Length: 413
Image (cartoon, rainbow, N blue to C red; front, side, top):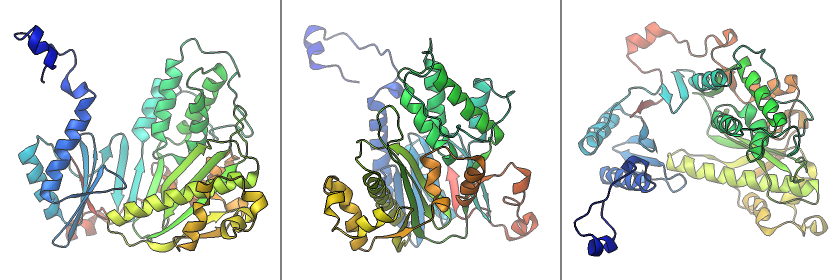
């Protein structure tokens, strides 16, 4: 650490006393990332322009992908020799520890088999339930009551809002593998400034819903196509506080759910058609970004991508620019959906409202409809007796062939 120039003149013989370790400084992550990325570039890795945490390398027909979060690293490759060479290189520049096959990463549990990869956050969910003291409560089948509209002034203000903020923050991280709570967590996160007893009661209902199946997560089948398809929906003026609308979408790669979101729109729209048109534009941007990620991973994506919507008027506006009276007040950037259709990247299709998977991210649903849509998303609870066989393979055959049970070789560093 170098002293500022003024200290050399006034006190040349003094030194600086650190009150914080270097790891806790704001500059530390940037310096570490710069040093680590430079080392990877030396080894032949290329950085993804769509996600700067992703590095890829294609060498002698072997493909290697590296994903880094601060100092936690996941390496996946089509060759174990490539992983061994990378570990040897990194050990020469950094002190590393190989944790073996990927099983647990930042609170995410990973289970591999010949049928696919399953991820969940069971331990993390149980920790949340234990800290909130709801393990002895009765589980619920719904994360939120139907037609419940939380307002800013509902209930009495909490004397100490910190536990509520901490709980909602942990629930936000839980949505990494739990799309079913994305909508309600999105609603609860709007009251972080001044939470009330009503908001806390709604948050505890989410915990009781999680208690019903803490091991629920996503299953990525090993046999899946490389075709992008998305479902998008919206709920017009559903926020009682701002009258803004909710955009919800989910995107699949083949039969695997890879992206989803529940987000409030930034403007108040004049009509439901405008809201739905904005939702389609947002989903098309996400589809384009995912196509860039897949290209960096050297996947050949089948185009055009399918975008399913349950509103015929919005589909007509996206394909026909003649409806001036209904679209002239819509901002120009929303019309990129037309460009994506004309360029051949996107193809819009109609889907029945009962089969609109994005409904999960825009409103609270009844238990039967929620369970039906979640089953269509490939959301499974591998700890449930009904899912026996998902991760069970013919172990003897695997031992004889000495092959890994993972679709690709992956290790954690």
